[in-house]
Length: 110
Length: 115
Image 1 (tube, rainbow over the protein chains, first blue to last red):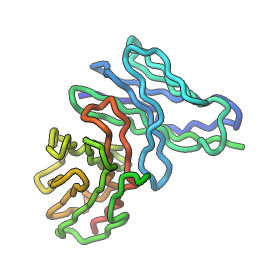
Image 2 (image 1 turned 180 degrees about the vertical axis):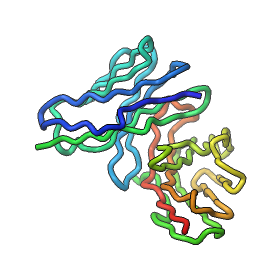
Image 3 (image 1 turned 90 degrees about the vertical axis):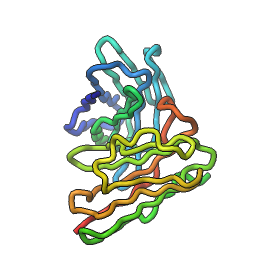
Image 4 (image 1 turned 135 degrees about the vertical axis):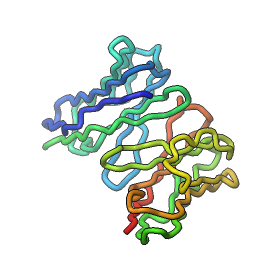
C-alpha cells in the first residue's frame, strides 16, 4: 500500500518568511496530489490539487510542486502570517484508494 | 452555502452501546467519504460512496462498523457494539464527482469517546 511521509516535527518560522513543507511517498506515483489545512477542532480544508503532469501550481501566496522522480511534493507559503499557523496534510490517490499523510504543524511567530 | 453537516459534534458513551454518527453532504455532490482520525494512525479512509452506492469499504476496521447512504442527502456510520479503541474523531466529506481528483469538503467531525 502507499506510504506517505510528512515531517512530524513542528515547523517554526518567523512572520514574513517562506514556509516549506515536504510530502514524500513510496511505491506507485499518484495521478493527483492534494494539500489540505486543518485547524484544531475542525475538519481539513482543501487548498490545492496538482496533477502528475504538472510541475508547479500556485494560488495567491501558496505554491505546490510535484516531482514524480523524487516522489516528493513541496508546499510553500510565502510571506507567512501568524494566521497561517495550522497543520498541513498532503493526500493522494493510489489504486482507487485515498491516503492522507499525518501532517506537519506550522507555527508562524509574529 | 451550507457545508457538510455532521451530528452529533461530541458523543460520550459506554462500551457495548450502539453509536450512530450522521452526515449531510453538500447538495449536488455525488461522492461521500467517512474518515477516522487518531493521533496514532492519522486520518484513515473507512468507506466511500458514489451516487449512494458503497464503492470501497476495505478501510472499515471490523464488522462492528457499518455505513449506509439511503439517499443523496444523508449517510450514517454505525458502530455496534462500541469499544474504547473506537474513540476517535470521525469525519464525513463530500466531493462533486466520483474520482479522487476532486477536492473533498469536510465536516467538522464527531468526537467520539467510548468509556
